[in-house]
Length: 289
Length: 114
Image (cartoon, rainbow over all chains, first blue to last red; front, side, top):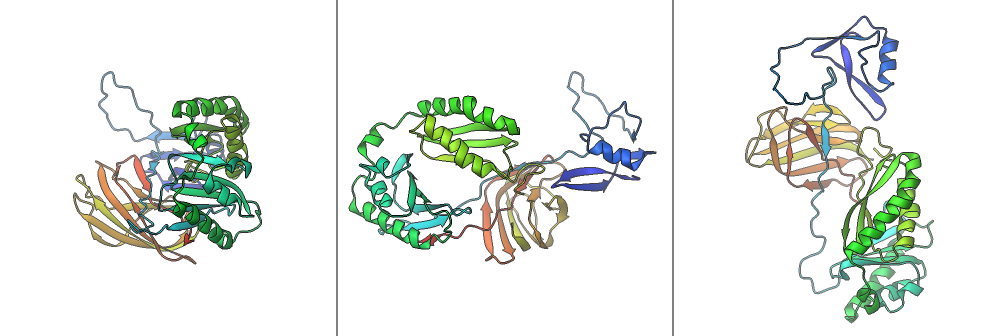
């Protein structure tokens, strides 16, 4: 392999870079490649390859733990993720009720953002028409033919449609916008007083969701090397993160919506919005990258 | 993922700057910016661009090999194939020899008034 070493393996691509301080001597290239795919470890007991270091005298600090070094393998930098700054989508202090619709990339849901608070600090999930009784906002939305579920969270409403074959949200979104605007302009309470009065504490939500994760969700996804972590609870909304084999998995969206959401809502019916903050493009070899 | 034609970056440095060239990693290839102006020294604004003409899997801004680089704000203008040009803003972050920061964002999903 001459003067080359592996810099990194990413996105199924093997990248070879010239070595600066390490030279590989007398090795069969096949053995070299075999070593790479058996864990990128250079075993000191193996016959080859032989690594010769150009060592420089280093003063050791007494008592300090020796950092793990991997000669010839420069440290992989940690990629920091910082949120993009979103600017206000509405003009300030507008007297009109303004609503923006934003369909999800998968097309099954649409997020409606309103320039008025709909539910302060909490959220509520309406799975069907019956659950909307007494909540004028949800009642108005379920009167629309294609609305399957409604999630109200602070300034937003998320609608799931019944007909999953339709991707054009414009006709339904206009009906939803009209319905939301009508209820907001009427000035009545948007959500049933009973729901507001019975909102659970953050502690109740945290305990319930953590129990489901520990006893139901994680044992399930562990079979695929995955795991789910409860990151935050705000009001009755929760934020989770998927890790291990779930992070970057092509079936993560299905697992989230049909598995995790269902488990959470069955065990903790008063849980509201469920946010997933997993970055499915991070890591060395994610499916979504 | 869209095909990126070009992107232009503008970085506002905070109190602690750096004097090294500014590098970015595109799909794990470390490169320098073209058409550079300004600098990454304390309080200065660095601007640079690059004609990529490739599909974006990852794009990061690389930290300095020595010292720290305190970034106050990053603004990136993307020109992607079959997409309207769009700009993404990021807030404060500090980079060093062990870190890089993701600056790639897919084109925003179009929203409409209803």
